[in-house]
Length: 409
Ligand SMILES: *Cc1c(COP(=O)(O)O)cnc(C)c1O
Image 1 (tube, helix red, strand yellow):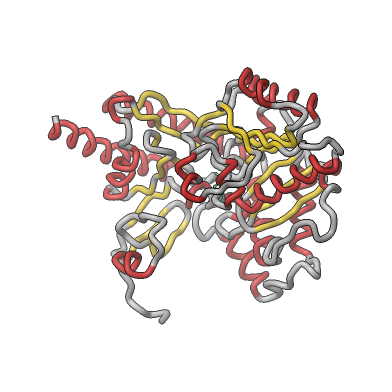
Image 2 (spheres, rainbow, N blue to C red):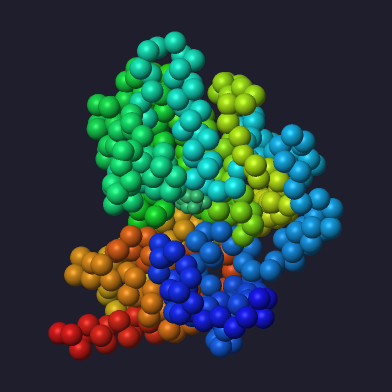
């Protein structure tokens, strides 16, 4: 079976059709270069959706993985292990948090946080303190609880009946938030930058206002940093740029640099409201995942890497503005660090996916964030010459896009 020849058509034959992958199959990667079955090379501006923070096959991650692979893969949570404790120490020492819960994905980290919020409400002694406030256009994962907390009904409506007690209000609108946050609120969950929703940063005043409202009403403030965390914005976590500290933060994606892992990090005040047996996971905190995450986290959490992310942001924005001066298809380039959104002008609404497909033809991996935003989330250490080459391929894709437009006109 390992040598079975497979094609893109086999995806349609054998895979549940919840995805519509590109029409090529990638087989190997090195740094920010990836190759497909035909040995065509791509520049990777997608980074496995903000996951491959050190690019592909980084020696530090490879070494951590292979060393741990000869030692201990999995033992279950009836036993603790060394890598998990080392990773917990790194997270606790470098953030606001006192305690950590490990799992395997962003959705699971948010699920752990939202369940805990309900427990906090229960233990508060106020009857009905079980309402969760979330925001329109948000994305928190695909489990039933997290997809309901997300603010895009198209992802949840087909799966009703949905969990109750989640209210959605407009992102960046503090007045609306004030109107719904009250004594019955047990938690507010927010992304410091809405990632999937279009690379839309939260206003500082909005986040400060949410912090204040949570304090006034005894609600837990949860920052979903699954996409923005682990250096993505040029800070270790995005909250560090805001002057606002959450009670709970969820992190995944870049944390394992490509190995699946997630975590909920939390203050003592709330951590101790989960008791033995309240929540759990089979794989969470497994030594293999934690050994890789330890190496990735330690590598990223240095001034050189984090400052490099900021430099690359400036470099991207300069390059993208230059390209846009030529084609005039984007209304705005926005984001922070290496979470960058190119927002299409109204007349090109809905064309983001088309542009990403054209980029693929030119040898560039890119992402969308909704129908109107082309998103880049490359490796945090992508070499500048790869940025140049990727932008040049992006320019060629936009050239084709503009050409198509003229032909249609
Ligand atoms: C990707 C993402 C999630 C879901 O993470 P999974 O690992 O896919 O479950 C949750 N929240 C945000 C902000 C994300 O970007």
